[in-house]
Every structure is written in structure tokens, then in C-alpha cells.
Image (cartoon, rainbow, N blue to C red; front, side, top):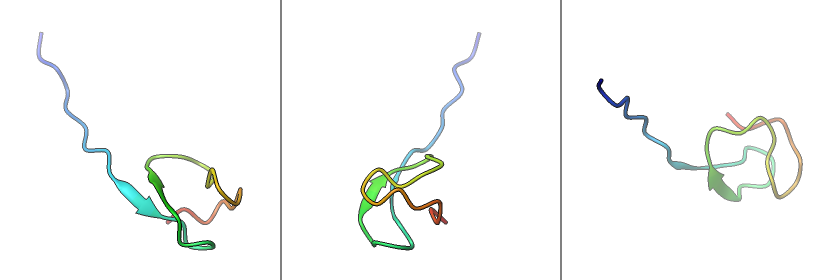
Length: 36
């Protein structure tokens, strides 16, 4: 069985510009859904 590798990076929120670990539906800092 092979493991599936997924690249998880920090991306900035489009509303508050705070970086957070992606993927998320909402920014953990401001709650905005504008996450890219």
C-alpha cells in the first residue's frame, strides 16, 4: 500500500493577510471565507 503525499502550505488570507495552514474553509483569524 502506498502512502499519498499531500503538500500543505501556509497561505495568507485574502481579507486580513494572516498566513495559516491550508486547506481551510475559513480564516482562523478573521473568519473570512476569502481563503484563495
